Length: 598
Image (tube, rainbow, N blue to C red):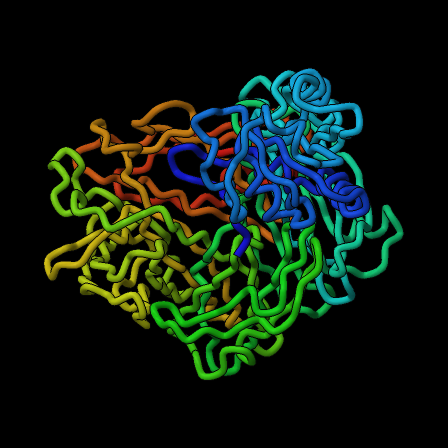
């Protein structure tokens, strides 16, 4: 497993990791590996404790002449590589021909090290791996998170399928101007196919990147790889959000969507359903780093079981590999679920299911390693109501089947004490179903269309009547299947505490300030040619007695100009199906993005 720290709930993302792993930086760091490999013995000056992350990503930068520090209290402490940290003042006597200073500020390092090195020692730094200023939102502070608003996307264009990335300039809500999307496309071998910038208006405009258009623009062969996205001019936050459609060409019956927000590798991922009889499940393994993934470094196992199935092939830098899960983990079938031990090599893996002529694609979710069962969840104050809830739609049972499967989403959770609260669209409680204290290796999938004959939504809720434990990281997979043509789509996401005035730790969350989070803003993409879009808006309520929502739907043109708005109201625990073509008429079919603000 890569020995890197990528993300934690308290500190957020490790920006050093992003700075070192960035594809542009990786090119300079791989060259530095070559230089040091040819230059002989070298030592490292590590003023910021960066060495372990650097060496994990670039093994050739492991020093053979010691690790030096200016912090007197760290002298003699483990250096993370099997040795002990040495005093910077002893560097001149080290015998090292080269000193690598772990800093992006070369001149500053030359000045600092002048007193402890001699003329025969060459001083190098990480400055060659620094991104150019034109790529930085804040050049004065290189490790500002806004300089590394980045993400990866699965991207494919061949005779059967196309992909379409859709997002919006939500950075303008934070007064960002001159926002651009810098993009680099890799093929399945990790080779660069194209680089370009997408310029967007200084308004909440829709952004569409279609693989067919990119292929024609750059005269490319068919490809199946990944798209790296770097936001230039980001403000407010560093999370790159998008929706990604996979759609079939000609008679191919494929139209599925996956979203992305998490740009951090993880040791484990969950929400991977085992294939049903007659289905082929492909896991797309996409290396997010310039370091190869060795054969056997990634494994699959049935959730809650320790029998592992190792991926038998190596995956090169930034390369893509299609893994037949059913062939590797034979005998594990739905409703079992699988766990991916990814060893910090991957960012948000995708999986694709083929059944006959139908295909669908979805994503896995990060399984947390920093969470432990939280006894306080059993006795939350009454002001928190039902506490953590996970709301999700129940589509009209006359036309769709709706299935939910709870997922363990932290490494230490061993049971899931859960209940389903089912509501109709008006917010009236229809029924409740206690699911029991599910073990980690449960094979439970609940058919919601069998619990109600009405459209609406359900909340997954902690219920400790039979014991069990919770960690506040409640997740589930939701699968929807058409009764007309058998096509299905699925997704997975997590729960929160919603719409309480009192707070519990970081809940209810807010994107625009500290909790409680009582408002949100959503950008909803409209359907592409020949398709109508819809969205189920849910008013989640952990407590009773709250007011109906004050929800405004804004229709924007593809240049970010607001065309119309409509006001709707959703009862607490109610839902509303947004059909833009019904609400806004024919004008909505010509636009790229509709923004719904609740």
